[in-house]
Length: 387
Ligand code: UDP
Ligand code: MG
Image (cartoon, rainbow, N blue to C red; front, top):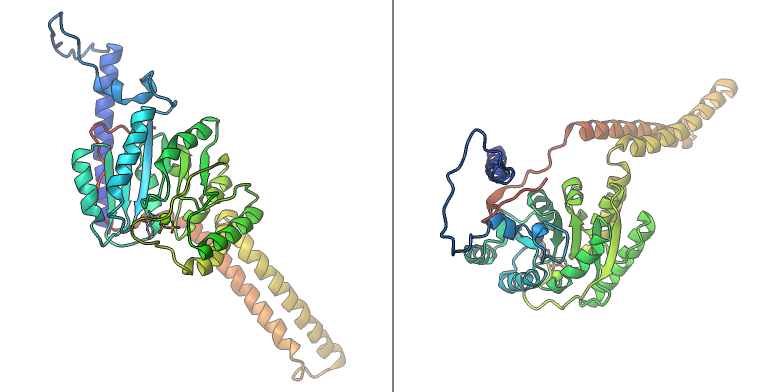
């Protein structure tokens, strides 16, 4: 696993160093800074037009045709057994970008698919240099897939969408328009949702509770279709099952959030990966998200407060009984409340200790990218990592 990680870092460094080499060469050429090294000029016949620099055409921010002031947009697609829809999705995305004329990449994160998804992606990548991919050795879940995708996207804007064609790539321009207004995260709202009854209503319930608990005024926290500015995805950590509460995580970090209504389609191929169990997991997730957003950096405040309260109540009960015993010599063996007091004191100390251990973990454990990566393709024809 460590080996994998060091390889991953090595690969990144290779990509980075390649990028910086490209950038330096470009800068030198553009600024004419050639005091030490002058490249021999290529000569073209005067009646022939000079070929355009590929850098300039690919960097859409410099292109007057681009409809948005973004240099590169990353489409991040987490997927688990979605072989049937990938080619169609790629086609729909490229149609959208042919229209808006902004540079883009598609990063597929294959979350340990056991069907032909990876093969399909590789076949697509052979003829389409916009496609990059990462493939997990096993199924880690949508949050893990998004998280590693977030770490590896190179665009200054990232759009996440599900692979099953339920999200409509045609909504990309609407999300970008909203982002352009100055928001950091724009979440889709599947106002007219094409999902089974139970899923629709359980989701509505959780959205309502999350809205009340978090104070964020959006309707659909768990929409797969979202647009982010780069610094949002490089800041938040999506682990466990927290992809359902990304707006809460982003809000907690102080990012500005908005919402736009998006089209939603029924699932045509394959089947949903989140069944009825999501209803029960939802509660646990909600507790997790409240804990992680409010107390993850200060667990002692949470456990410590409970611990101190429990300890104090137990202490008062037992102190009262001790005084009775001491002053009035009342026999304590028939006072069951003595046990309650003792238990509360012990529980209080335990909770406090738990908080202290939590504090130690928070301060020491910053490493969370322990995914076993089977293989990946992270370089496109024009790799450009923007800072
Ligand atoms: N997904 C994933 N890993 C998982 C489960 C799902 O990457 O463990 C992907 C899935 O392939 C799809 C997206 O997450 O692209 C949303 O999943 P799904 O469509 O099953 O969820 P639903 O739309 O039913 O809520
Ligand atoms: Mg779906």
